[in-house]
Length: 351
Image 1 (cartoon, rainbow, N blue to C red):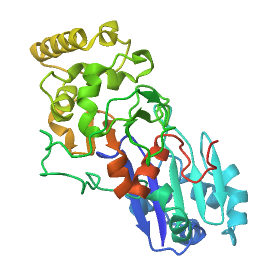
Image 2: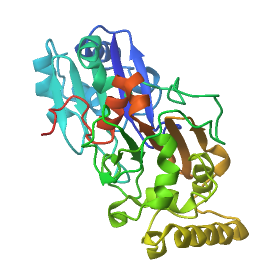
Image 3: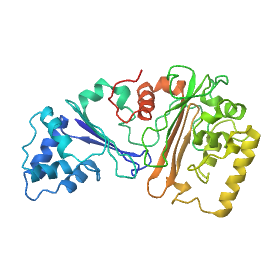
Image 4: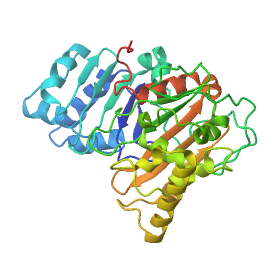
C-alpha cells in the first residue's frame, strides 16, 4: 500500500489530508496516472488527482499534463521518476525522491503546502516519523485520563510534577519529566514548522496551570499563544480546560505582543480578562472566525485544541502533553514533535 499525506491549512480540524492508495509502490501510483491520464486523450489530470487524493493538490497535476504535452514515456523505475519530477512537476521548494517516497515542499503564494507519497516499507521502518502524519481523525487518543471528560477538563492525575523552568525547543525528550507544547499555528506565508515545540521541564500537565500562574522566567522567549494561555489561567483553575476555552475567544493572535502579557500573572490575567470583555462587547472576532467550530479535549496528560482562527484557512492545532502520555504513545508523541520541527518526515535527524 502507498500512503499520501497533504499538509494543507485549508483542510479540516487537523490541517492535513490522509489517503491510502492501493498501489504497492509510489512508482506504481505515478505509472497508473500515466495509463489513466497521459495515455488517454480524454484523460483529465486535475480531475483524476482530485478523485484519487480526495481533492486538489497544488501543482501535482502538472507532471501528467507536461508528460502528455512532451510525450514522455511512463517512468520504469524510481530513478526515472526522480529524473522527470524536477523538470515537469510544478513546485516552489524542495523535492525529494527515493525508492520509497516522493516528498514535495511547495506553496500557493499564501501558505506552504508540503505533500508526501510513501509506501508501507518506509512507514514500517519509521513508525516514530509517521504515526501522527497518518493519524486522520480528531481527537488524538488519550487513554491516560482519570475520570474522562472533555472541554471542561478532567480530574487531576496522580503524576503531577513539581514546577520547573521553561524553555524553547524540544531538547527535553518525551521520556524526561516534562510537558511539551506543540503549536501548529501561523500568521503569514511562513506557515510550516516556523515555531518549534516548547518544553516545560520538570512539569507534568496536571501541574501546568499552577506553574503558569507562578512562573515569570524567560517569558519573552515564549510563543504568543502560551503567553495568552498563561494570562487566561484563572486563580481557581486546576487544569488547562477553562483557560483553553477562554483562548478560543481571544481577539487576535496576530500582530504585536501586548507587553501586559509579560507581567506578573495577576496583572496579566486582569489585562487578558479585559481584552475578552472588550471583544465580547464588539461581537466580532474578525477573519471569519467561528469559536463554535473549535474542538477541545482536555485530559489529565493531554490537552488538545483545534481552534478555528480563520474563515479562509480554518483551524490551527494546539497540543500540550507530558511524558506520561508520551510514554503510552511513543510513536505518536515522537512523530508529533517532529511534525512541528521539520517539514520533511524522513529527513536526517538534527544534531
